[in-house]
Image (cartoon, rainbow, N blue to C red; front, side, top):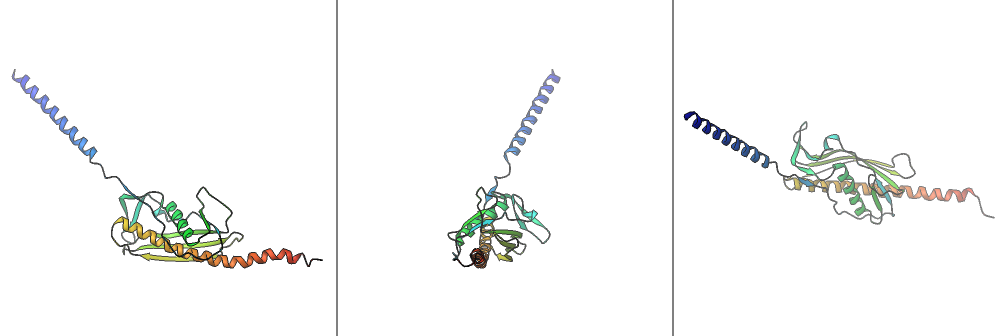
Length: 225
């Protein structure tokens, strides 16, 4: 009889162990990491420039490979990057930069049409804008830095009418990610200010050339009888 009692106790003990183990595993499954927080860039108001009505195609901006990821990148040192584990971009950063920059340019060029190359709308453009970004992140010094090369091309030209290099930096108001993203939007708007100015200058250069081109056929035809 004693061996039957001992066996029954052992069975109940093993059953209790299994129940405890199952509870631990269930609790571990429920204690998952918090849901990610998603961020996007946003356009900022800027000075409205006087320019003819232009159609501007913004080519898809290029970004360095280390920024081409869903996580928000911070530079911890010159050689090491930090990724926000639960803080991510709501869309590919390349797309966010393109659409936000297009919105910024539209606000600075009233009456003009600005569209992104990767969008669903296309039209014959007066100018195309190419943006190559070399750096766009929070640095180890605590500033948001934007380093970009910009080329503005006239519709009928094979070479860059205006090619510029721009560098901007600003310090976020806080150490949180929302402050970081807001500062990135502000720095991108400063790039839009510079690109809009470049477009105005390029349009002034192109206007006399277009006028001369339109006048040339009349001159070549000679005086009318």
